[in-house]
Each structure stands twice: as C-alpha cells, then as structure tokens.
Length: 332
Image 1 (tube, rainbow, N blue to C red):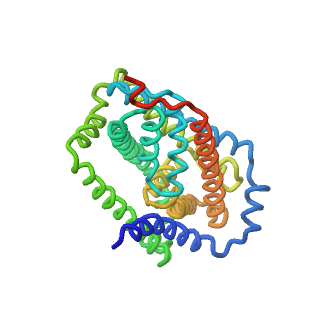
Image 2 (cartoon, helix red, strand yellow):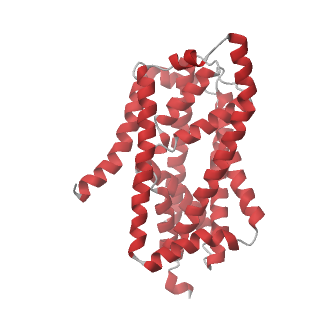
C-alpha cells in the first residue's frame, strides 16, 4: 500500500463513516426543517450561554498545559498556549486526532518548546482525562440506575423490548463505530513505533509524561482537569434549554447523555460527526423525547458547536500569525 494511498485512506475513511451515519439519520429530513429549527425554534439566548462554556474549557486546558510544561524548563507564553489549543481543535475537524500533534508543533514553532516533551505532557493529559471520563460515566450510570429500575418496574419493560428499539441499521452503525474506534487505537499504537527509532526522542516523550510528578501545584492541576469537564458538560447541558422538546431533561439524565456522547466522540470522525448524533438521539429517545425533535437537537447543537470550533480556530490562527516567534536558540 503506497504512502499516498495510506494518507487518503486515513483521512477519507473518517469522513466517509461520519457522512454515512449522518445520511442514514437525516435522509428523510429536508433542509427547510433544519433551517426552521436553527432559526425559529432555537432559543439563541441559551445557545449563547452554552457557547461561552465551549470556550472556557479550552482556555483552562491551555492553563493546565502551561503548568505541566513548567517542570520541564519550558515556559511558553499563555496566549500562545491558548491559541494553539484553539487551532488544534479546528485541525482535528480536518484530520481526526491530529490536534495533539498540531498544538505541540505550534508551540515548537512559536516559542521553541521541545516537540517531544510537550507531546509527552499531552499523553499525560489524555490519561488524566480518560480516567476522569470513566469516573464520571460510572457516577452517571449509578445516578440514573434507580430511574431506569423504577421505569422498568412501572412499565414492565424488559431487555428484549429495549433491544427491539434498535433497527438492523442501528446495530450496524453501532458495530461500525466500535470497529472504527478499534482501528484508531491500532493506528495510534503503531504510530508509537516512530519514537523507538531514536532513544533521545523516546526519552523526551517519557520525561513529558512523567512531568506530572514535578508539577508545582498538583491540586490546581487536578482542579483544572475537573473544571475542563464541568465546562464541557455545561456547554452541552445548557443547549437543552434551547428547545421546548428537550428543556425538561433533568441534570442527571443530561449527565448520562453527555457521558455516552463523549464516548461516541472517540470514534474517529470529524468532531464525532455521525456517532455523536446517533448516541445523543438514542439516549434522548430512551428518555422519552420524540425521535424527530431528538434528531434535530443533535443536528442543530452539533452544527453550532462545530461552527464555534471553526471560528476559534480561525481566531487562534490569526493571532498566532501576528505574534512574534521566539525560537529555541533565542531562549538560551
């Protein structure tokens, strides 16, 4: 398989998977219905507040990253860290999971920060975020378990009835998403072999990973980590109040839907497009929201939130291109 074909496959497959799922979900939805939902049925006062909490976690992520780099002797400017985060999220829309490399390369270019060391700190970030996400998901399921059990007792609902709620295509989409996630993990593991070619590179990455042990204020690092996810949740939860059909979703219900949607984003499509829509719609239907408003909620919210990522990426790129670079040689 040629290198060019591999690149096309790696970039094109996520887009095709996302577009395929979106086409299946919205094949009977007209553009007029979408435009009516976004311009006439959306309460933009709530949406504006939701978008604010889409910005805050990215800024906090930059502050946490700056804190992790300090023990390594790297002191990038705060504005550069923030703008590189903005650009990295936008980059991941084009090539899924490319944001981590993009932001490390940006810090290298702008402030002369070691690429491999900063990449090591990003690996640590992902580990911390994964642990928190698993913890939050466990809490969400335990929080909602009494609700599900009460619902089952009251309605006489059983697992077989639940299974029949999924169509054959629904099961197929679920399997495809799981396979795509496994494929992404395989590609990432194979990519790590690149670092085995040089002992110094591997050593720098490991030092970046272990930098967490030397963080000056570890409780602050953990606080930043929790606040990032609180911000993400509020970004999602406040959007429920934008629509009459979803305004009655309770915080515990929203929290579980948020967790399920966060896992769906792990499937390598641009910003989780497709898998996220499918997961959120499915959870909303399970909580009693009619299917049509459920699918439109997912489409409108994801579209608006993705537009925010694009705008922040453009802003960050513009800011970086008007900022003076500080090469590594000048720092010494």
